Image 1 (cartoon, rainbow, N blue to C red):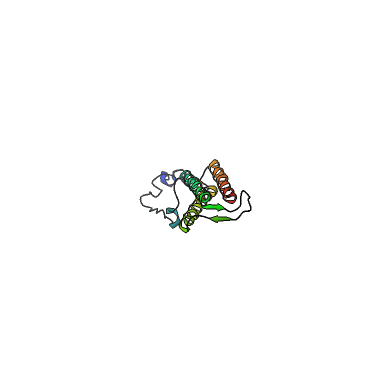
Image 2 (cartoon, helix red, strand yellow; image 1 turned 90 degrees about the vertical axis):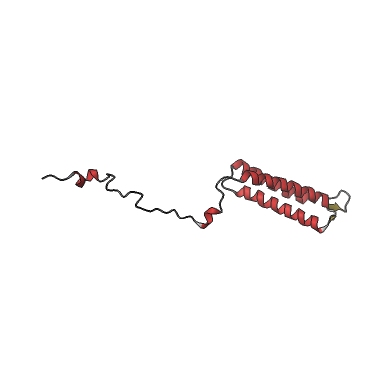
Length: 131
C-alpha cells in the first residue's frame, strides 16, 4: 500500500495544515504614547501660527519700548505700556518660539518647511535684540 498524499512534504503548505486566522486571536496592543502622536503632518498650520504670533509679539514689543537715547543703540529702553501688555507680549513671544521650534525639529515636516521655520526663528530673535 502506498503513502497518502497528505504525508508527503510537498503537501505541507496545504491550507488544511495551517491554522486559520479566525482561530488564532491576534490582538494589536495600543500603546499609551501612540494616541498622543498626530497621524498626519500638522507642521503647516503650526508654522503659520508661529509666524503670525512672532509678528504680533514684535509689533507689541516695538510699540511698548520707549528708548531714552536719541538714536543710539546703547540708550536705555523703558517699557512704556502696562504690566498686562508686557505679559501678553511675553506670552505671544513664547508661543511663537515654541511653535517655530517645534516645526524646525519635526521629522515629519518637509525639509523646506523646517528651513523656513529656522530662518524665521533666527530673524525673530535678531529683530527682538535690535528693538
